[in-house]
Amino acid sequence: MRIVVAGTPEVAIPALDALAASRHEIIAVVTRPDAASGRGRKVSRSPVATWADEHEVPVLQPARPSEPGFLAELTALAPDCCPVIAYGALVPQAALDIPVHGWVNLHFSVLPAWRGAAPVQRAIMAGDEVTGATTFRLERGLDTGPVFGVMTQAIRPRDTAGDLLARLAEGGASLLVATLDGIEDGAAEARPQPEDGISLAPKITVEEAAVDWALPARVIDRRIRGCTPAPGAWTTLRGERLGLGPVTLAPADPAPTNSAPTNPASTELAEPTQDPLKPGELRVLRRAVQVGTATGPVTLGEVRPAGKRAMPAVDWARGARLEPGTVLSSPTSAQVSS
Image (cartoon, rainbow, N blue to C red; front, side):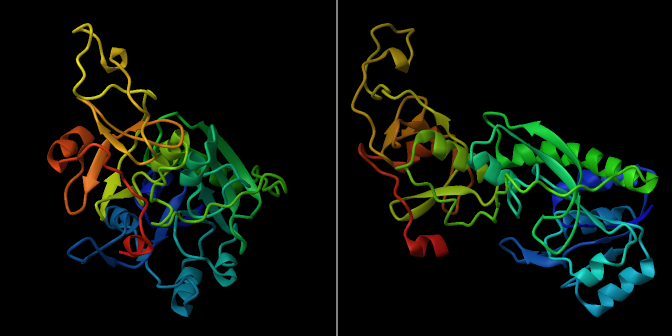
């Protein structure tokens, strides 16, 4: 089939590579317009636009896919089908009606679970053990169209959203090619989504990414992994934002830094215990930095102080001059908006 592929971020690249190697012909891509990003506000192209430039594929970048000029261009191209991978804009009915076989969306969940912009993040934050990818016919509703195919993927205990999305992008690329093959052969059948099991996955806000240390440790662990790498979990220390990488669950009764082990070969777990940490309270050990939660401490991984690079928490603690009883706090509304 002659296809026009719609997508914007890096996660769409595995599907583009797979489609380019398939029997289908990519005649153009549709992606978001070039935009300023980074501290220097340098204008850059999307990963999909960059891929198309490198492969000498025409690029369409409408500000809105409802623009008459874009609709005219798409009509002139006369694609048989338009695959979609994380395009980032609502496609109007006028555009949906142009290709003979419609628009086929690759979505990174097992629909009808986690309809919306952040299905991978929400699955991790909810503690799901299995997720996957779905191909379905795009329609005006939010990820409500009939399903062509599904693949499943186990969520590993230490998966971040970035880790999981990378695996789903690779597996989903094969699913998308198989779906287009089936459509062309007449073997693919789109079936309505079940009415049970619907859940929504709105975009993760900066406010949601702020850690509430009064929550249970496992909830905090999942929230931070779900926000990694974007938008990035964070907390505050002395009124300044502190970015957080994934944490690990720690023993409930760690040893104090200055306690001497009864056996020189023993670890901190064999040393005398001390009072439990309050939610948000920091404790610096010889080889770890722990934070109290509602159910027991977590051990910090990497942290990113305001205006600095990410670093191991133990290195950060050496220079942060943390007094005993120092507490990481929940952000204020002003800190969330800053």
